[in-house]
Image (cartoon, rainbow, N blue to C red; front, side, top):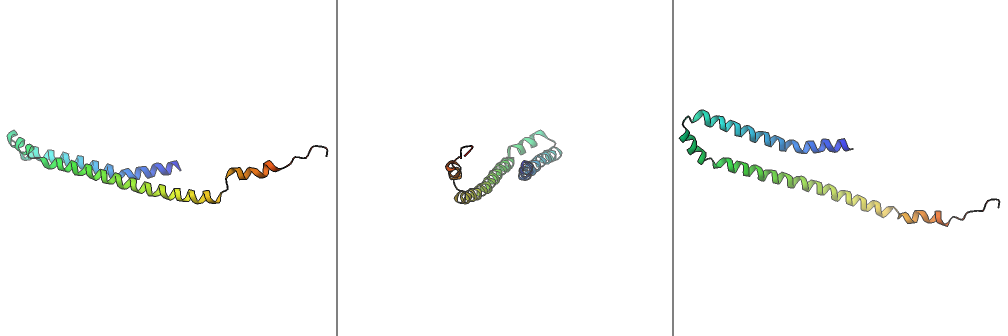
Length: 114
């Protein structure tokens, strides 16, 4: 059962790793494009100053990660609620442990040789 849980956790993290890989690739490609398009350092500096779009990209990715985390937590809470309901049903039908031992305690022992 533990190995099944581990595969489930890996499946949950695949989209997150995919997002990180895409972001790194985009960052690297944008760097290569800037170096090849702008030869002059002053042009690169002016472009760098106006490169607020990357900041908004990372902010958007962070917000997307937050939403993804909230959705995962919501799913886990739903599963936990279902398990609690199942446990409540079991508790209703299973008598308390003390009731199991009442017949054992009330059994009278017969002395040997009687």
